[in-house]
Image 1 (tube, rainbow, N blue to C red):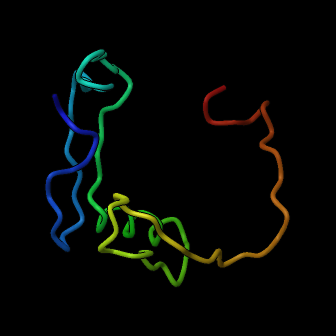
Image 2 (image 1 turned 45 degrees about the horizontal axis):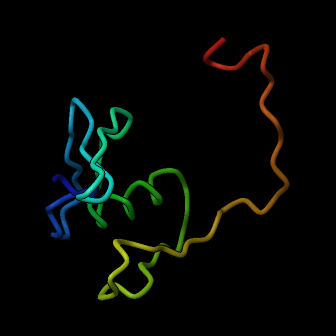
Length: 91
């Protein structure tokens, strides 16, 4: 049974790619999840947060049993706006 975490726990940002999804669920009732492809390590999660503009990114309790929980601040403190569905990139 695969676990939904990146095996690499180094300080180098990286993610594992599972092209066909993963097996998940409890051992007595395993399921195949074809929607989970990428599993970043904690360094990758922090780098992604910084890449999109968050500041003061910090991992909460790095030694805890939780995989990775972060706090971060947004540069812009303003109310968000709904996307214009007529000009959205997927239209």
